[in-house]
Image 1 (cartoon, one colour):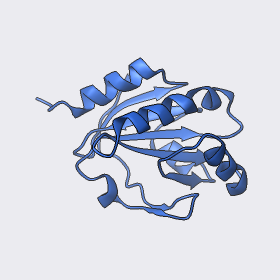
Image 2 (cartoon, one colour):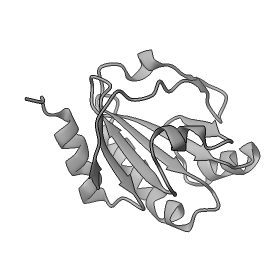
Image 3 (cartoon, helix red, strand yellow):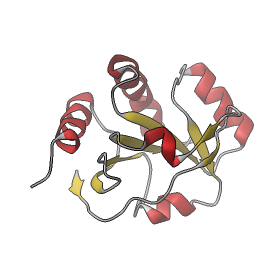
Image 4 (cartoon, helix red, strand yellow):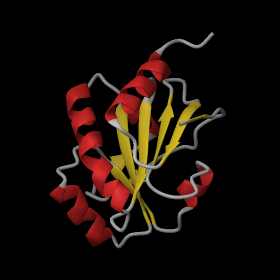
Length: 143
């Protein structure tokens, strides 16, 4: 886990399931961004953790957003269906967003506070305890 800072990149666009994501969807909420790929074994191990955390947080919890890296959209969509991922996922075929977040390899989870400021980056599979702690810390007011 690494503490990071600065303004988060704007995340918006068409999702893999045909919806859209706009900054207004997550404004004022903690944002959990997970970068993943179907070809990534650790991504497969962590996906159920993210799905469960999203479900348990409910509509008033943090906003979860997946970013699929360098996959065929049909393959990524099958992954979303197989894991019953209930949060939106964008496609990043060029790896541009991974670059913007300073992610050297997958999986990676970025936690952004409700003011749109980068707070934490975890490169490698995240465990539930770490995820919960980082969301809690990002939810607390900063001095």
